[in-house]
Image 1 (cartoon, rainbow, N blue to C red):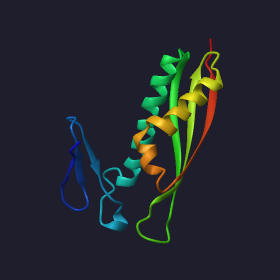
Image 2 (image 1 turned 45 degrees about the horizontal axis):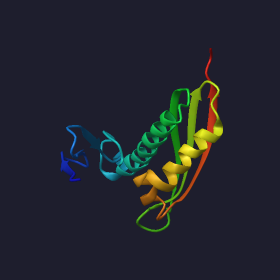
Image 3 (image 1 turned 135 degrees about the vertical axis):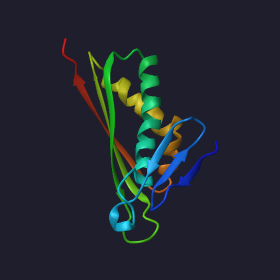
Image 4 (image 1 turned 90 degrees about the vertical axis):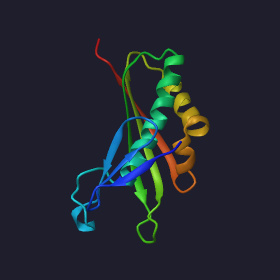
Length: 141
């Protein structure tokens, strides 16, 4: 994969990779930016959630889990005393809405994502402790 970032003045950057989509990044005003985009580290957290989500959704579909909603939240802690401020803890919450969800099916999907398939979690686990919890919400009939 190739990617690029182009400076648009101030601290505003626009990134692009193989797809035709772009993402705008910026810093806050205290760091010379205008707060016009994501912080790069926010994109790392969002990308990690997205990577795992694609795995978990795919595995749940194969297991025929009857889900109607899916969300991942992540709480990130960083080392704030030394540079670089790397992620030290990432706690993911996998929220699955559906009917008669077997938590073991979701747990297995999460386990496979975290231990085998998710490239982002594999990379983040080099500096951060990875943990998760699963929340099941029964869908209304």
